[in-house]
Amino acid sequence: MTSFLITIIVLALIFDYINGFHDAANSIATVVSTKVLTPFQAVLWAAIFNSAAFFIFKDHGVA
Image (cartoon, rainbow, N blue to C red; front, side):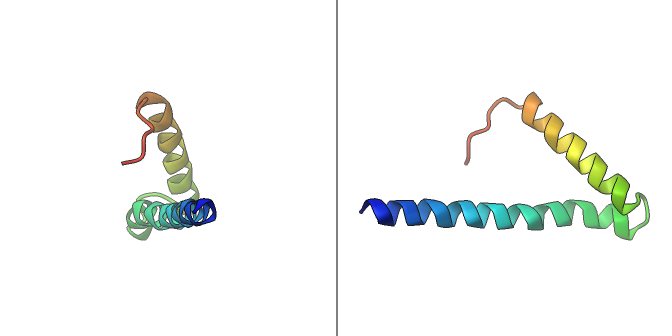
């Protein structure tokens, strides 16, 4: 039972990690494809605001 639970938790973490890649690409793709920002600027802005959100919003619970 314990190994099954550990397997489920590991699979959920892997899914969440992969899903984060897709979310990051979707949030950056529009501004880069319309040439509003360069890819470097878009990644920099995303990193800054994601880091700021971590500290501003104190509820880090998973829904």
